[in-house]
Every structure is written in C-alpha cells, then in structure tokens.
Image (tube, rainbow, N blue to C red):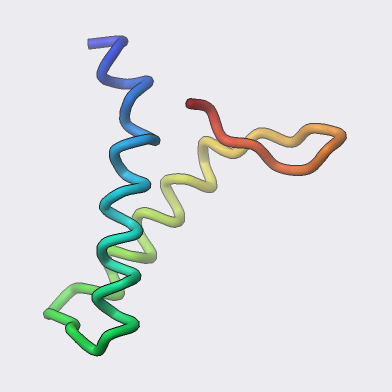
Length: 58
C-alpha cells in the first residue's frame, strides 16, 4: 500500500497531462474541468516549500 501511495503523484501527473492536452485540443467531457481542479488541489496538498521553490514528492 505504501509503495502505491508514493507512486500516486507520478501517476496522477500523467492523468493531469492527458486531461490538459485534451482540453487544449477542445475535447472536453462533462466533469472535465472539475477533474482538473480536483487533481490540482490534490497536488497542492502534497506541495512542499523549499529555499529553491516548491517541490512535490516523487
């Protein structure tokens, strides 16, 4: 379970990229923007502040 938890940010990044590219090309479905906002909010919760700027665990 722990291993999957640490892989989640990597996996969700691919889903985010797919949704973003689909939106850019005009291929949007019901709930598309809600999914994007949900993923971004989830990633914001994982964000860590460092001297060099924000970083996300991987």
